[in-house]
Image (cartoon, rainbow over all chains, first blue to last red; front, side, top):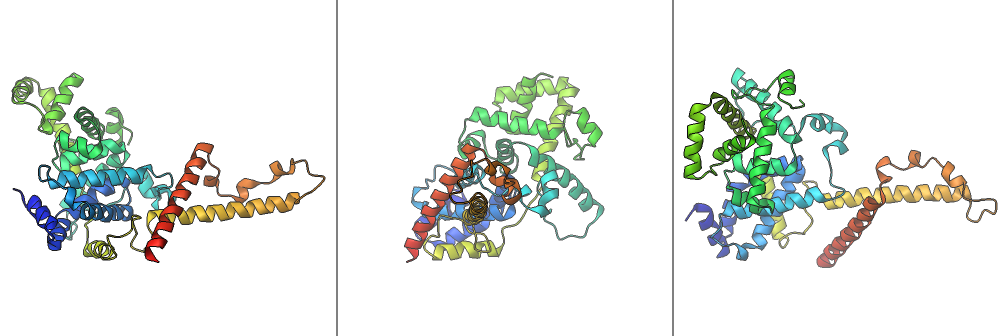
Length: 203
Length: 166
């Protein structure tokens, strides 16, 4: 039995510290997923809280047959979809200081306190290019590729989180990869605007 | 390269191929430098996405969650760090827009006159509404319907919250 399932079962038996341990293990990963979905860190933080509140309320409904992360990302996926469906949700372009983010996607920093060496600068340059391209692909493609490439979820798990079929997930992940491949070389370099245009992308 | 071949490369990266399909793809990869190059391109995308990073959930986020749990599982409306969640922000924006619209209507009413006998209504079209009402308030009717529903939903939530706290 994996650690998450043990923690969840302990929480079901009244151990609040097990709930906090689950938060510690998953909050950052969940936050990064949600930031990619709603493109707003403050809203994503609220959705992380909302997701864990729902976990807290619905603890009795958790069944150890499913991985805890599948359940968690399903709840988070629903929360993100609800947020994105709201007619008056705040978009990046609602805020005057977000003009750059609107043009180039979310401006997130790589998590590193190390000095800005050439490697770090290079990583930031590549990261910015991928950030910008990733922000431009459709929401469901972003979610599917993130859950596959970053979270290592199976098509079945992603299908559950996105409330769709495995066949759709396969297509979503593939389309996202093909779109992004126009912006990244196999060496991890961002593709130049000219080369991107040649590959059929719009940088 | 066919689109089916490309889709198989994606499925391979996702670990979604059967053993037989993996064996067939290996043979195709061995015979095709073009296919190998495409696989490298698609794999580079995954690497780049994994390297994107993002924010870290700090202790403050945990404290806020803890506070909401202590409040009794917290309200259904999420709150921002400043205590104003998206729903309340939206409600505030709607209320501001509604107040502005009401002011504009009052100006129109005063300009036309409450019961002006000379008025045939044509004055209304000469009032420069777009100068007094924010552009995003002038919405299509279906969106306006959604706004009304949203306001009613939010009022119901706020009523529930107030009832719960009293």
